[in-house]
Length: 115
Image 1 (cartoon, rainbow, N blue to C red):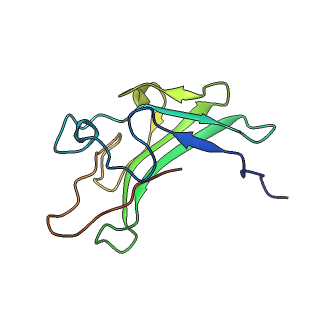
Image 2 (spheres, helix red, strand yellow):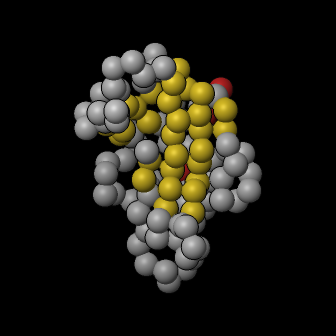
């Protein structure tokens, strides 16, 4: 029995899908996590986990920028820099919390997935 997540949507009021992530949310800027909003949770959801991942990073499995979990299903948004109220896992920088995008110079465009 699988989860039906076809209606799950995650968006940011700070940028739209396919756009560049604003500098504020990168390692070149303030390096704060962006505001996020979600809807369409499957029935019976109790908690959420959030991952921000860059599959284009020149590492064997890409680069995970953020791991956040223990988010109650009653929460449907995170304000900017608001992840620390939940459990922040270890990212690919070997730190707990958010590490903003910083693709290597000349590496081309990267894609960032908030899942």
